[in-house]
Length: 241
Image 1 (tube, rainbow, N blue to C red):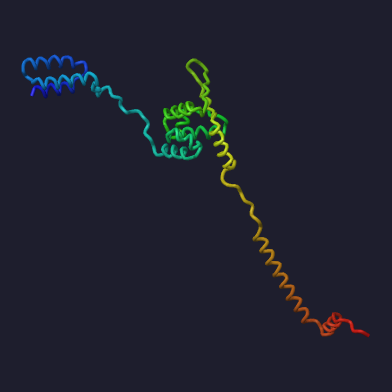
Image 2 (image 1 turned 135 degrees about the vertical axis):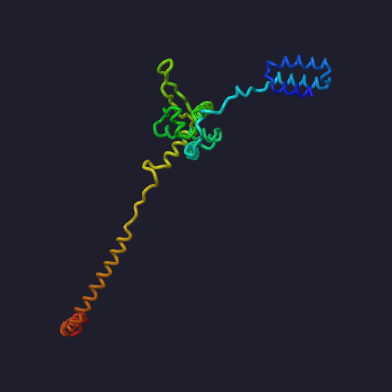
C-alpha cells in the first residue's frame, strides 16, 4: 500500500523533489514498510525520472496567436504551386508551400528582372506564412538557385532584399514560359476569309444572269418575223453563186 503511494509521488513530483522521495523510500524500507523488490523498482523509477524529467504542464508552449489557414489562402497556395513556374526536377526539392513561394518569385523576376518584395507581401500572395517564405528562400539559396542581396541602410534598418534567379535551368524554363504565352494573353487571333460574301456574290451574279436570260427570251418572242428571218439568213452559210 505504501509502495503505491511512493510510486504516485515519484511520477507526479518535480525533478528537484526526487532526492527527498529517495530518502523517504529508504526509510520506509528500513522500517519494513516496503519489500526489497518494491524498493528496487521504486529506486529504478526515480533514476529514470532524473534522466528523463517529466515536462511541467505550466511551461509547455501554448499554440495561440497563430493565424488560421483559410480557404482563400489555401486556394492561392495550390494555384501558385500548380502554375508550373518551377521545373519539375527543381520542384522535387521543395514542399507545396515553398513551391508557391518560388512561383511568386519567378513571376516577379520574369516581369521586373528581380524580386524586391518583402517577405510578408510574398507570403500574402502565395497563401503561406512568413516563416515558410524564409525557409523557401533559404533552401533555394543553399541549392544555388538564387542570390539574395541585402541592402543595409542603418544599423537597425534595412531595405527589402533583392532576389535574383541564377540557375540556368530555371532561367531557361522561365524564358520558355514567357514565349508560350502572348503578351496580350489568350491565344493568337486568326483572320478568316470572306467566304460568305463570296458565296453570296456568286448567288447574286447567277440570279442576275438568269434574269437577263429571261428578258432576252421575252425580247425574242416579241420580235417581228422579218427580224427573225433576217437574223436566220445572216447566220446561215453563204451559198455559192
